[in-house]
Length: 182
Ligand code: ATP
Ligand code: MG
Image (tube, rainbow, N blue to C red; front, side, top):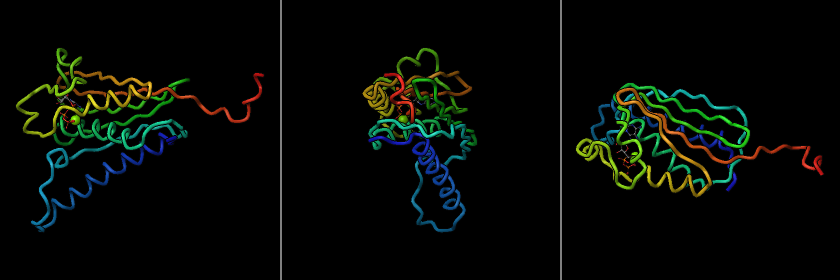
């Protein structure tokens, strides 16, 4: 489908903002029938948005692309200590859109950086097991992004945090001058 990436990204981030609020309410209530929350959702986090106001129409499979962003957001929460800020950015270059998510978490050691997109690869096996998950999230994300002709990569500093970025090919709609070049 063709979606407006700007609106879509904001919508996903709204859901993460809401999840956090719901958790706070659940934590503050005496209702002990509330389900225990997965560890990634027990944390305090603030999402800062640096998102273009422009409509960015791109051709993606909504469900799959949502999984990609969900995984990167969940990782940002899961692999960060409590109270971090997550910065979500969306910018447009002349023929790409670049979406990135920066956390203030554990970061990824240099030797592991090239492997985090491999199937089942997890940096800290013991800790990862305890956190839950399979180690497939980023491998699947890479497949989805590359199938769209895009790229996914990470910049990270151990102990400081990570930025996961996705670039997708993008052709701006130049309404009005479609016929000028003939
Ligand atoms: P799953 O996504 O299947 O639930 P997972 O989150 O462990 O499990 P991936 O999303 O593929 O798997 O990530 C692979 C590994 O990369 C993680 O186990 C973790 O070691 C590392 N990693 C991913 N995102 C981050 C991050 N934001 N900060 C630090 N390490 C990360
Ligand atoms: Mg994951």
